Image 1 (cartoon, rainbow, N blue to C red):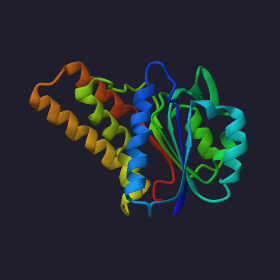
Image 2 (image 1 turned 135 degrees about the vertical axis):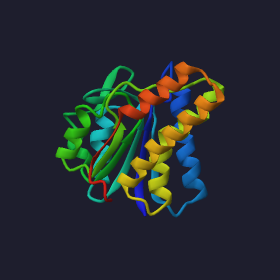
Image 3 (image 1 turned 120 degrees about the horizontal axis):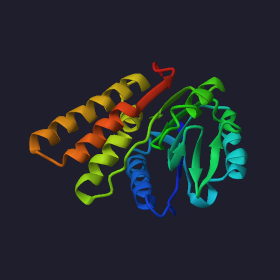
Image 4 (image 1 turned 180 degrees about the vertical axis):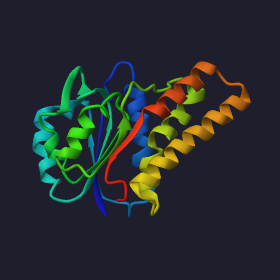
Length: 205
């Protein structure tokens, strides 16, 4: 079993509830299948800061772990309340991690730096991504966001296989919504999200 850390910005004015719902989707899975993780630590907005990361992550990084982030992002960092709490300055703490995040842009600069400092693998977005808060689309958005993570945790699929399946899931949903004649702006955003996905590091894990 593996240790899991989930950081999420539950106090964010715009997407706080969405981040909570994404986190709940994973914690519900872990509660139902308690053999999947040795521990699951929740890092709320109050703890999404450099001081906490610099203290907490070195305590678990001697062994492999999964770090999940549902927050905003910029190309070189995860942000909470407008301040970076994971950046180029402290990304060395994430050696031995599988780093999974729905934050915008971090696949551009932060992710390669994570890998350079010993992070085993990364899945996330290299461009802006869209979270869908509208009730009729929200569950689809959450499922897309968490697909590779859930597949990796619950099957024998590798990180690379889980990532490929995630992109295929996006494609299937896009095709389905096109057939239904759904909102083209929504479909366009799904396509953009799929194209913004990136997987780095050891895809055979």
